[in-house]
Image: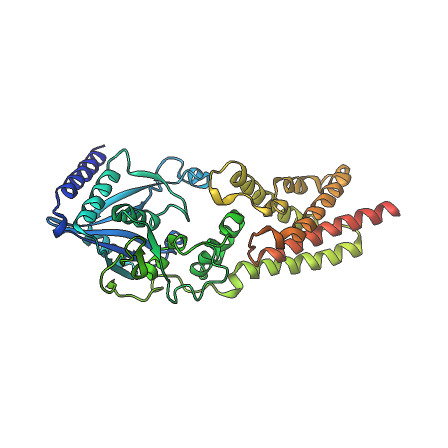
Length: 398
């Protein structure tokens, strides 16, 4: 309780200092931190630096609390509450530089009046009743918030002119998903999970302003952002490397190919193919394999169902993968052990194969991008489904 009280006092003190600061003596900088090691750091981080009489501060909209009640459930549901914090600059810089992460600062070219408006906006945002906001991974995050603050303070809309070569290594079309894939390339299992959980909402082409959701891209564009009305650049001078590490110095090394989702998916497909050939020859299915395969698919289907119909995340629906991964798959690990349920399993596999065929047929027109590792897994499911259908029909015809 005392810690919370001290925090509130510190925040209110900071608000008062900002309102009292002399604009002509205040330097505002847009600071971009390059990717870190953990999965929530892979696009980087953005903050505003306020160098003013009496203090040097970092204002960050990227604070969240793992220890808050039901954090994981609420995060999956889409109730992702982040908050804005202000801390002394030195601890901010020391922390990220200590992690080996590159830090680049861009001085904002504001008039005294624009600086005053920015300080007022931040002071209001730091009030206890305004600090928390509903975070959105691509539309409202730690990079888009400070940029929006600068836009409001400028009194003019911001135009991102160019990203230079920063987007050259990103697959076309430029979509939220393709940007993520570029910066998650050393974390293939994380990208596999994103491709599983997020539907076609992140596959639409995005404009140059929307690409600033990734702090790394915002850093590349910062020197090329202009005010629409005047055409004046938002920043002044060249960017300054505060911590001059390599851009990917803190990122994990590439995952060995044999530990990637594709390697695992191909192993499942090969095993499914071998077992299917054996099962067809002996007219009997391998129940232990199917119990595991369909059990995992059913659990994944439960998660997808929750994300699509319960979660308030904007990008989780629609998701065509529900035709493949759905909770009904959980009946297979139970029914395959019961002799009286052969007809039920056969009926399920007829429906399952029809859904797989339909999904593959409409996928090219659905506007949703699939992880490459999905296709071997879908093929394995189709093989097992066909084996059930073939074995049941041949047994009935004897």
